[in-house]
Amino acid sequence: MSETEIVLRLNAMGDILLTVPTLRAIAERGINVHLVIHGRWAQLGEFLPASVHYYNGTGSLIRLTGQLKKLHARAVFDLQGKLSTIAMRSMLNAPITRVYQKRNFNEQLLALRGKYPLRLSDQRPVWQKYGEVCGVNLDNPDAALNLSHDYIDACRKILHELDLPEKQFILLHPDASKPGKQIPAALLAALQHGLPLMTAIIGTGSAELPSGIKALDLRNRFSLYHLPGIISLAAAVVSSDSGPMHLARAVGTPLAALFFQTCPSLGFAPIPADNVMVISEPMPCKPCSLHGQNFECPEGHFACRNVNISDTVEKISRFFADYI
Image (cartoon, rainbow, N blue to C red; front, side, top):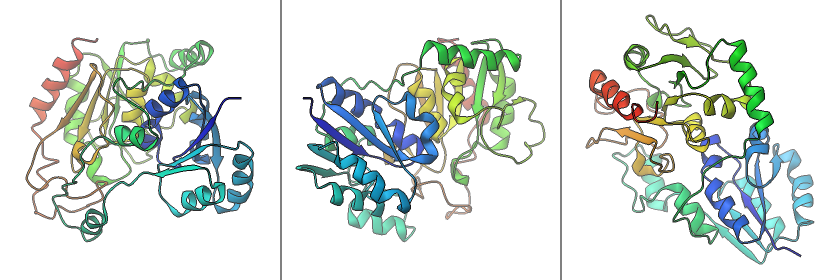
């Protein structure tokens, strides 16, 4: 009978996608790997290389833990470290239990106090740290999602309805969960004119697009379930530091990832690949927050967002030229 291991990583989309190389590496050992994510990400569950279970708040904790206990897992790896996963791993009481620590206590305290620039003692990427916690080697990380032929065909039908020819458009994802991560309007406008193919905007925002934005607006035109397939059928993606950035990497679409207030040194850059470019201007005050949550610049200039627009568009266009 095969051994079983459980990985707990409830949120967010990007963090869940960064577990994929670890999940694959565990499975390659002949181990049954089970992943617990929050129910809000259920539409992505079938694409993940694990048996997926869903946490739907504290009311589901006892029931979910009861189901997981029946697996008699030899190991539980907590990559979240929140109260919900602390309770879960305690109740499971597996022989092997390991916990991922994002930052040491002093670094966490400095972040909470708003001290900047944030300089972590361990700047290795998060996906690599996940592998270390779970005891697997990730020298050649496999970040790919499992997308079936039937699923891709269904996504092609959506493109046809939207009158978008496969691989003949570039997706722009300007939004992010925090304001300091969002692509500035002026850069977004320049991207729609300066890239070699037609552009379309994806996301879940409902606000009116800034004046001058003429790219096809695909926001809220299809579900999260179809987002991986639509991205896989695009020629390329330009994205803010966000979940769709990691999703583009996970389906192998050429990607330009833009970091403004945040910084790859925090460990959340996309998993490296030849067709992935990360753009992040080094600055002595950056990053000034963990998640890009500062509405106002503590230095009074927001230089991290006032990037050289023409240079940035040209850099992205040159990079995509090798793949489009």
